Image (cartoon, rainbow, N blue to C red; front, side):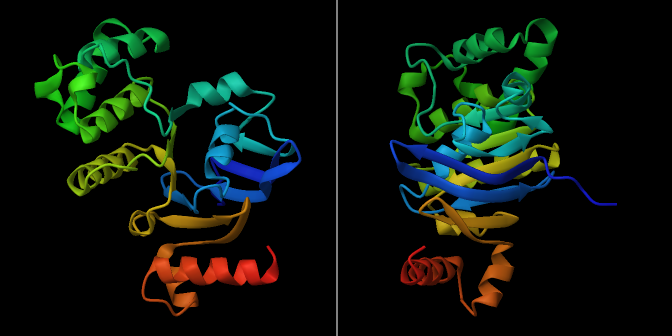
Length: 248
């Protein structure tokens, strides 16, 4: 029995004033995997995520997320996903608990359900001792964890992360990945945009994006074997150079 993808794009394209940011992207992401969308700055990663989150309409092509069309069924898409942007949407003058309560109100999560969910998330992220601390007084890694908790409050089926560990120290990055693996066990599918190739190697599958085009897509080990490379960085650099030589 064929497993259906929870994210599918067909010829997904977005142009801004004649500049093509995403160019005919064909992508499938399957339930229960971490998929890494890898590319340099300006490659089209954020634009792709924003289209998949129904925050930006494509110029051409189609995309479905959790079985819903990102244009025609945008509200159903938003109800099914969590999106953690590069800039965490936190209220710095509110405490950790107050931020979570605010997002709980937005999502309609109240009463005993909110207590249970926030308790679970605080334990998972080891943020229980900091519920009374203002968000503005948190370290970068703690802000990251708080933003993730707020994103997860409504129990999304799919989680979109846009370079979530950018500028975060190595220990916090390690802790963040431990949380992601726990989310996988809980049945959440994750699509992560990243420029960190060592992080990409932790993903189940990786898509290399360059100038808006998906130029390679496979498991990290398979990509390294096919290129006879020692690590994903070597695969990435070689693939980009080949694409540029072809004028892609």
